[in-house]
Image (cartoon, rainbow, N blue to C red; front, side, top):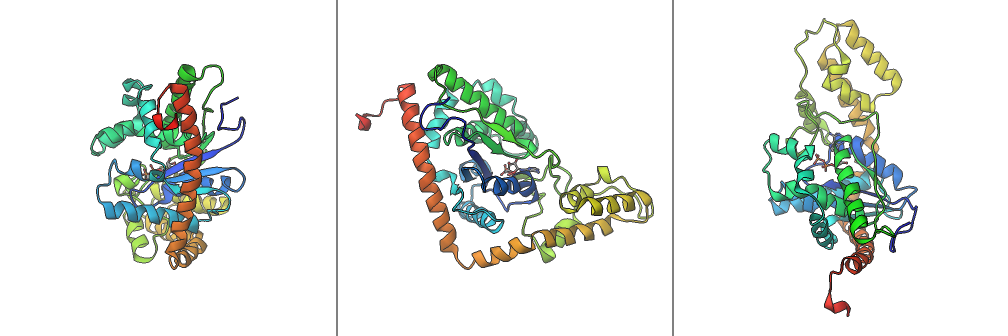
Length: 338
Ligand code: ADP
């Protein structure tokens, strides 16, 4: 049971992706693949989170370019705008109002415990207030559309818990009898876990350790060559379960291919160079059709902008309905509504 504007018990899929760099294999297997699958059957709101990206990107040209490239990537990978909404986060500036309200409900200690923040600071990212408050903007992102299901990578589990806590706090304070916000659940694919980057850390745009979804040719070779492996000699047996190359192969290979490669690792005489060649072939083939669609879409940039514009209109409408109710419940007065 929830307040207008959200329909009780409806599954609303909501998720975002940062426009802070080229989208990569971690984004695809952790999130985008599930986004594409879920939007076929449920109302879905997918946004390119350019406010969040500002925690690390200061170059306006790069921010815009990454935003459009993310939209292009979704469309090339099969996002169908007749089935869901794809839009730019900053097309819904109302989000910032909801974020402020959520700030006022959130204990600082909860954000201090956020592991993603601590990891990013430990890896050398600047600890600006945007980075610290990142999960609260994310909570607003999810709740403003009444999101109930959030397909994300395993690295985001804690942030979805923060969004749930935030919804509960709001409901407790301002709508105890008839909760305003549904509590969102994460949707995390178990066998993907966290995709490692070429340096063995979590693959992330923030760490410059990615393999881009559409990397090909020399760029793909260069990235794959740089994947860190141990120094076991070619003839010695190797453990596939501790190797970064195998961790990536597993994402693409069939069960049968996986057990063949696993056996080759364990028998010895199979080097990491061999495994890297296999990985290059698998990536090239897996994204072949999408790469072709991307080339076609690139010929029609107006189409990409139209998709984003319409997605933004739909998202704003839903967000406005939510914020009208939020203002009424919280007593935030706007005289233009008198
Ligand atoms: P990044 O860390 O590259 O900036 P984002 O914060 O934009 O990634 O994350 C977008 C989505 O991709 C999120 O759902 C996140 O959980 C998922 N994701 C990002 N990196 C990985 C990874 N290495 N493995 C699995 N999922 C990931």
